[in-house]
Image (cartoon, rainbow, N blue to C red; front, side, top):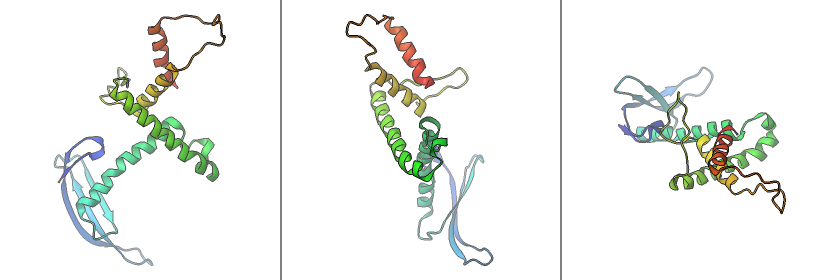
Length: 182
């Protein structure tokens, strides 16, 4: 079976086996299951999947499982970069109030970053020890910060006597460094 978009790596050829079985636990009712076993022909990966819907074809069960990747990545990025499940969210009411807002913020940043990428303004920040080919959410949020900061007028006086002029490349360097550090 050829899987597309397998955990963010494009196409992946996998061997598949399926069947039905029952799950038995002492004192509990028997649960009928469809099992699906995926095997990598290269021997690097074996995945066992279970479903209580016996009518689902094995390919659909695999598709549903693979769709989890984008959700898992989104949840991890929202934890790491915008504060979902932080200490400020340890009460049920706080979670109910802030989580939808933070997920909305994640969506806004993602949509703005997509526009910036189409305009060639989404930089992929790399380090000597880690080369990236595609932008990550940290690159996206840094690009959106730079975009927003370009729109800010930092003058504090109508006469602008407090302004200090710095070369544009230096300002852009400061913006780049701060956007990635925030």
